[in-house]
Image (cartoon, rainbow, N blue to C red; front, side, top):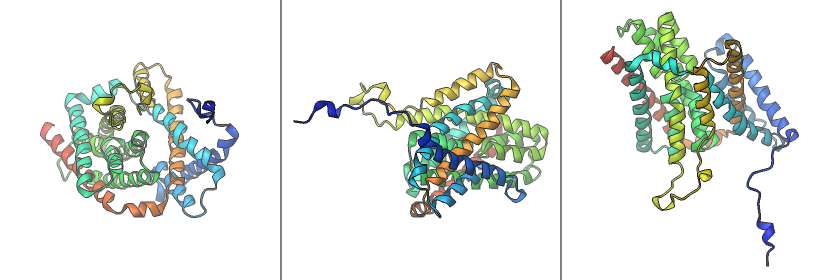
Length: 344
């Protein structure tokens, strides 16, 4: 008879030894530093350090490969460092910022975000794109680009190739918006407020919003930034809802323990920082330093994501997700523009 004690397992994994994760951390940090340096090159300045880092990681993975000694550190990067970075995103947001958008602006943000998310999920099913990748593209397009893709994957738990594909898609179409939008205010008869709201509500990344909107003036830039950050606040409820939906709990299993639910608890840290930031308890210098450091943490995480991405597996996924990203981009751009013209 088997020894019963042999089957007893500890409820929590043993802490990772520092020496085990150091090689992978050094690799991802080195790639992040290199990506940050490459962004300073004029011809690459339109790309974020995040996308450069993931491209570098993919290059390393699919050329020289990643020996096993780096794996623990890469895993640590994708789990612990990534979640810390998402929590720290809360320092960029405050409740008063949302209030300044006004009820009409906030209404446009909510309707556009929710409509785009559900349209993307619906159209993804029509195209036959796998549901996890579809949700990543939906979150990236409707909320805040790469950061939303990364945060959403914490509960969707899709393949690293799907994450890389989704990040690439939202980056491409967000960049197109960044370059195209500044050419349109006069053609579409948009004043500075309308253009700012449109940029903030429909362009994918915060940096892309800032780059596009400020080309039309200070007022447009400030309004666009606030509208965009208002969208980012909805990252928390979307991730929480997806986490609860991913349980697949039936009515007969309602007694399941809360600890068994895949709730992304780090999202509550994100919300807590938003609340604390709204109370103005952080010195501006300290907050700026943390926000700048957090950009680097996200860049490290994206380097780790690239190091886990196989181009062969992305190729097997096909071109349909690209069609989905294009349709989602057109949908959010047209819907938000229509609402701005109707209500302003």
